[in-house]
Image 1 (cartoon, rainbow, N blue to C red):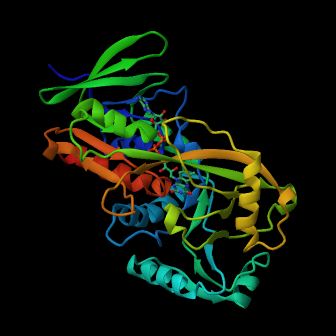
Image 2 (cartoon, rainbow, N blue to C red):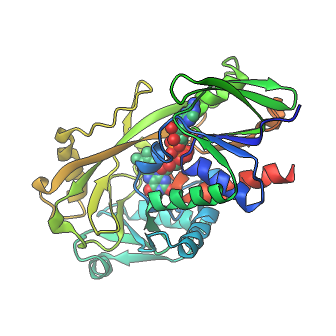
Length: 377
Ligand SMILES: Cc1cc2nc3c(=O)[nH]c(=O)nc-3n(C[C@H](O)[C@H](O)[C@H](O)COP(=O)(O)OP(=O)(O)OC[C@H]3O[C@@H](n4cnc5c(N)ncnc54)[C@H](O)[C@@H]3O)c2cc1C
């Protein structure tokens, strides 16, 4: 018996929607998106820095390096073609006195990743480029930028709709059963409705719950299965007096002990400036997005190191997001997990797990890649 849909996508964040857009581009119309919230983009995709990352940090050859590098330029083109707010503003990675070697290592990693538009700046050059910033030296990365994540998702969604795709909202995937060459997916919602949908292909793009959705198909026996650690990141916004006073993204050097980029400065379309995100490893899988007022001391002290005019009263709690980081046994680095699980005996099942930063930047290329696997099969 034919399946209800050729493809079911679980999750309507930027990654699931990018896959839908990729499928629509290739003329794959039999697609259903299942989303547990009442609209698309209510998860990680609307709780992040909205930075178009350059890809300078990732180990050469990693999936993050590959998808970020390819995704970045595709994203800029897509934004231009679809009138999505963005700015190729560039970023400064700021080094303090004594951090010259670390800055040089980062520069060399960026060169190894073939990142364009790089230059090392001394103190005076930094001050000329960004007068509010005072540091010993910096790496300038011209290809980094910012984007409206909501406008991006809305554009992906429109393309999916134009491709005749279906979406059900307030509908949670509860279980999955392999059925020969297809999958039967149990869905609950909206409301009390409970039903099954069959599909030849399933794309697991469930963000913070992607490891749990994967377990629905392969169980919990395999100790090598990817599992997630959730890491909360909070943001503070700066007083309106700071509006439009910063023209570039500004980052400290990588905080490798926390696997984070450190407390950085970014801004939005209106020029409003924010600081963040922090790093808080969560012990349980709970979506608590409260930002603690008392954390402003930490944010202030971190940012004051390179933004001397900052006062603590300039900071107000803003929002937070949660990163889905892959737990790794071998090293400190958590890469993306992007796989068609054919070799685990689940043909047609695609897992997109651990898509934390730079997932927003990479989404367009992840979407096109996954769509091509499905189209070419
Ligand atoms: C603090 C922070 C800062 C970041 N900054 C950046 C940045 O500056 N640049 C960048 O490139 N990336 C950044 N990222 C990463 C980026 O935001 C993510 O990689 C990206 O948004 C992940 O998208 P997603 O679609 O996988 O997840 P989500 O947006 O969470 O989408 C998954 C969807 O699946 C749904 N879902 C889950 N389980 C089920 C189920 N059982 N049934 C049905 N639906 C389900 C959820 O409701 C959700 O809508 C940041 C992330 C964080 C947390």
